[in-house]
Length: 203
Image: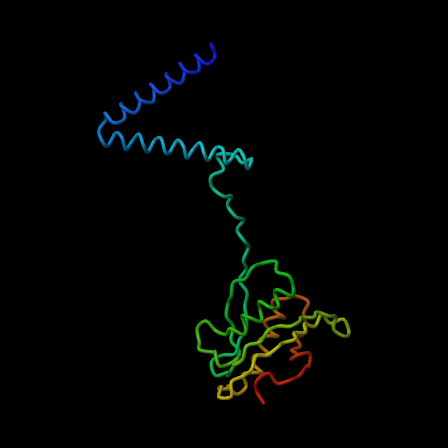
């Protein structure tokens, strides 16, 4: 019986404190009540954050994510046909350093295909191509490696404008770009669906 009596006394005491706090709260002006409400909500949110950090075993001071490692980039030269496909011009591009050979070939191919930043060279490559496969193999006589690129072409529109000489310069530009930026490569072969020496867009 004594335990029940003590429990009732404590409950009554807690209720009395709550009523007292409530009376004091409403006795204050509106600004003070808002301040108290903000402090209470902030305290609840902070306690919630501490409990969350505890459950995921994380330091409560790890508020901001770690700074990512700055990726190394390098500036390279690429070669592309000029406007009107009259000559091969050089431009600079920035790429990630340390790419694998296959990824680098794909990147260089896309840069040459995209054309110039400063001239209107869109017509020099009138079709889009997907690289199906890339092979790197030793050339005969030990003269470096050959890079073979197998392309899958998209369908060309019948009324598309083809710049004379653009295909030849595109192939030369791609080969020059790959050889310069991939030490050990001595030649580039372009295939279409596994067949070499096919015309890509010029007949």
